[in-house]
Structure formats: C-alpha cells, structure tokens
Image (cartoon, rainbow, N blue to C red; front, side):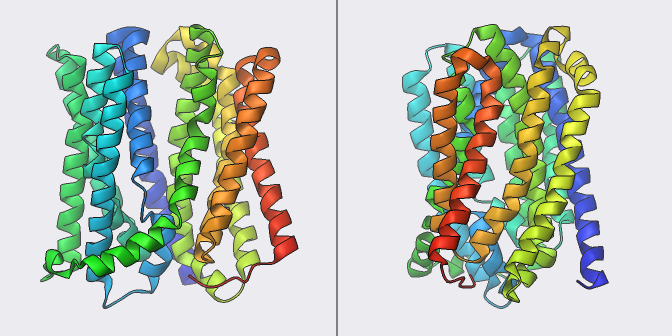
Length: 417
C-alpha cells in the first residue's frame, strides 16, 4: 500500500482515538457523577435507560454505515441525493423505533423514576440515528475531523449541563434531557458541516419515494444482522440479570458497560481504516489480504484494552465508581479479552458487507447469539458471572467457525458491493 494511504490512515486514527479518549473520559465522569449523586439505585436507572437507548438505536439501523459506506466511497455527483434519501429512510425507522421502545418502557417499567428517565432519553433517537449518515459521508471521504468536532462538542455540553443540573438539584428525569441536548447539538453541527461541504443543495428536493425505497430494500438486507448484533452485545446482561444476585450482577454490569465504551473505539477505528485501504484491497480482489491485515491491526489495538484493564482497572474502578466496585476487576479483564475478538470482528463484518453478503453477516450473529445464550443458561450455576465473557467469546468464535465452514463448502461468489 502506498505511503499516502498509510499517512491518511494514521491521521484519521489520531482523530478517532483522540475523540474516543475524550468520550471515554467524559463518559466516566458523567457516570461517576450520577453514581455519587444518586447511589447504586439511581445509577441503575440511568444504566437501564442507556441500554434501552442503545437498543432503540440498534432497531432503527436500516441503512447502517456498514451497508452504505462502500457505496458512498464510490459516489461523487449523486452524493446529495443519496444522503437525502438515506436520511429520510433512517428518520422514518428512528421514529418507529422510538414509538415501539417508548410503548415497551411505559408498559414494562414499574419504577416511576426509571420509566421517566428512559422515556426522556429515548427522545434522542431521531436526533442521533438519521444524522449518522452525515458521519458516514465524512468517513467515505476519509475525513474524520468534522465527526470529532461534532461529537466532542455535544459531549462536552452534556457534561457541563449535567454537572450544572446536579449542582442545582435537578431531578433525574430533567438530567436525562442532557442526552437529548447533546444529540440536538451534535445533529445541528453535523448539518451545518454538510451544508458547507455541499453548498447550494436543497436536500429536500432530492427526496423521492422510489429512490428511498431502493435504499430501504438495500439496507433492509443488512437489518437482521444489525439487530442480531445489538442482541448479542447485550444478551449476557439480559440473561444474567435474573440469574445472579443484585450485588454480583452490579459488579458484572459495570465491567460490561466499560466494554461497551471500548467497543465503540473498534467501530470508529475500523471505519477509518476501511476507507483508507480495506475497500480498495477488496475491490482489487485481495479480500483475504485485507482481512488479515485489518484483523492484525485491530487485534493489536484491542489488546491495549486488556493491558489497560489489568494495570489501571483497580485504580479506575476505585476513583470513578468507588471502592465497593473493586470486585469488578476480574470481570473487566475478561470483558476486555472478549473485546479483542470484537475488534477483529469489525474487519470480518466490513469485509462481508463490502462483498455484499448480508446473509453471512446475519448467520454469523445468529450463531453467536444462540451459542452465547446456551452457554450462559447451562453454565451460570457452576461458573457464576464469569460465564458471561466465556459465553460471548464462545459464541463469536463459533460464529466464525460456522462462517469458515460455509465459505469452504459453498464458496459463494464474491460480488463487489
């Protein structure tokens, strides 16, 4: 690969890693403030609401970045129309997801405080998911600075607003509006950046039902895989929450929440890497080389999480959450070990998406979900909470093995996206 491509990759990785470093620090500060202000019960309400928000965002993934980014990379003149119609599809999906999850929360959550916090946070869904296509546009142009500016500004405002609200004694549901404020500011900045990049465009006039349906049908092919992915990343907590004591589950959930933050680094790093050289290698017929190079790079970055959990985990848990959470250390190390596999899997799913194989993506996550659930149910009584990381690793490795067997047996034709 040429030096300019590597240089571009390094610059983009610098922006991405700086962005996620700030996001992780700010996120820890936010959760630490909530935990110390409201105690374990209040922190649990916010953790539950954030999980519901992430599930809602996952359900609205119709034209995800993994599906459309390879096409955006090859577009020039038709870019404005593509963005307008994909935005429309994602907005419709976000509104449906918001309504479905709000009804579910209102019907199933009995604690008034938890229900109110959840319902308020869900309002951020249509302010986040549709505008993510703008972030995908900048990724397709191998230019991450606009995304970093928008995300970091929104996160900083949320942190300041949350701290101010706590100082003034605001109730939890009002503090939850800071997530909506962050999403609104982020989307406004992204929209302003896009208008500057594509001046003179009236995006609304590009929206056509027929073209939107084309993107809907294309994106829908990847929806099952996206939904199963969201389920896989939270299935362990869904199953263990009813099978462990509340104290033990709380220690475990803290570690897995930190894994969720770390895996966000994986997705952003993988997207930055893919636009710089993975897509090009795949288009040139070197998909295996792209897969191996990308997997090696992602595994190396993922190992940093394991080292950080081993060396800095106790200090971070004590400072952020308090000494009562030091028992989370073994779970944190195990979770970060699973994170290495999740980092590598980013390259696997990007390669399959670029080769236009949504069925294989769905199969990978489907097998992972089934095996993870089976291992948790069969092993929780004898292993305890540690069965969660074991089950996730076993599930994903089984998914990879199944994928390899299918590819070797059926050898599907690798069409370019």
